[in-house]
Amino acid sequence: MKHLTKFFAAALVMSFVVSAQAVDLESARAAKTIVELPTGYVQSTDASTKALETEVNTKRKSTYEAIAKKNNLSVDQVAAQAAKKIAEKRK
Figure 1 (cartoon, rainbow, N blue to C red):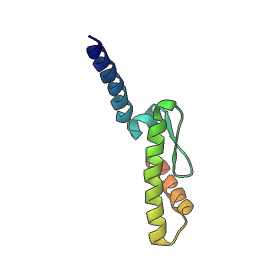
Figure 2: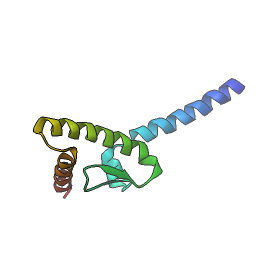
Figure 3: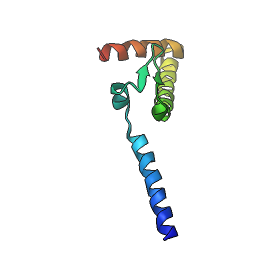
């Protein structure tokens, strides 16, 4: 019985982890738990989307760095342009 209880507790924890990872950027934006910043990055407004914020910003920074290097620009310049494009798309 103890093993069964431990199994169900672990399964319950895993279901929460999977649910948290299933939150995508569009859903988080719609729920206003992630907001776009004028810097080209996102900010979490809720603890439940902090991991998503980190993931999105890490990927964006990597992309911005590659574009900046290829075009002899600063990362900040690329990020600012991306922010403008994101804002235009979301109108």
